[in-house]
Image (cartoon, rainbow, N blue to C red; front, side, top):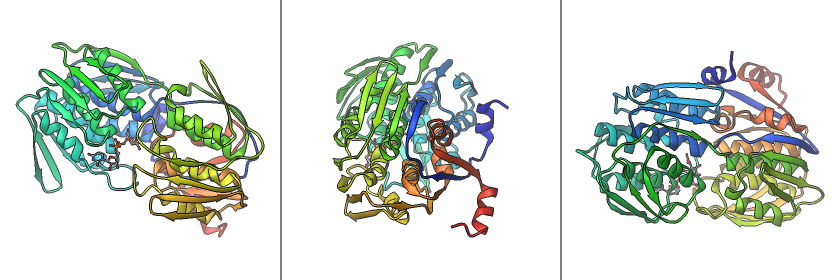
Length: 441
Ligand code: UD1
């Protein structure tokens, strides 16, 4: 069975078993970006026709979005990392609750559904448990572009007689709300000027996709975006760039284990602060047109960093840095400024013997101590990857339970790390239950 079909149907539950690994060497090809492809898939609904998207990662969030698009009436095929979405058959405006609960990005479908069908029915979107994730800014954007939102129990309904251009200001540069605003503007009559917009690379990627469909956009890369819809949107083809968070994860793995790895297709221009922090800790990074070479020899220095909206340090790599800092002798300070509950991973790292003290939104990490393998649980996507990285440094064997969290965003974290020498494997649920019964932990 082709990998795409296998992944699409597999439940992806299980655990990752990882053993201490001293050095990683070789090359990893970085998959297409999750946070870029999901809004692009949603935006394909804006027009009636065919969208072809290449370099799409085979991850659970993509499969979830495919199921939602099919439920809405679209035709979707996915093979060899290429997605073909046919939106001429879009008939339903109800985002299915069961799928939306799993993935926050489902909220992004509202604006395109309003533009195409005049209505969107949705619930509170789900996603990682990393803190309060309100949708007030999305609702503000929808209201200001001409939709009225009513609540019925835990479902919401947005309706419009036609979206219109508006002057919208976001009081916080929310990535998702900026994407909602771009899609609403692309489907609205007139011109929209969005100020306070997020500047994450994924916003630029969505803008370029919309431009390919025929939407006029000015100000890409800045906090002010001006958008004008085209009378006729056209079929388009788009290639998703490499995932900067996956690249940053494997960079973290090399920092933790040491070694030399080439990250093919890593998007260096989107990784500025990440690369700067790694270098400040003593990791060598060398940028080539085809990717980034990472080299870590000798000791790692401590770090003091704070997450923030782009171009700040990405919150999605905060737990990865928490894990990497365990290698640096001395005390590192990591401050979370975006999602308040993103330190849940610290508690799991403590089970491996990590010395981490949390005070408010700051983690103090005392690195350089021996870690020892234990049973830990992935509670969110990036936190799960951070536990895998910590497992590379821990004596003995670490079992990271909750693989379904990790599979939301990594195509094959075990295969990727094994290809550069890590002692790591995926254990399906049954074997794992057997191991547990044997009191291995
Ligand atoms: C996106 C990314 C996620 C990343 C985050 C910040 C996707 C699929 N996910 O999430 O990986 O961690 O950007 O870089 O692209 N907020 C509100 N009201 C809203 C919306 C957001 O108060 O209506 C707050 C959130 O609670 C959070 C902050 O704004 O504290 C940032 O959230 P936002 O930028 O919207 O993140 P997401 O788009 O959900």
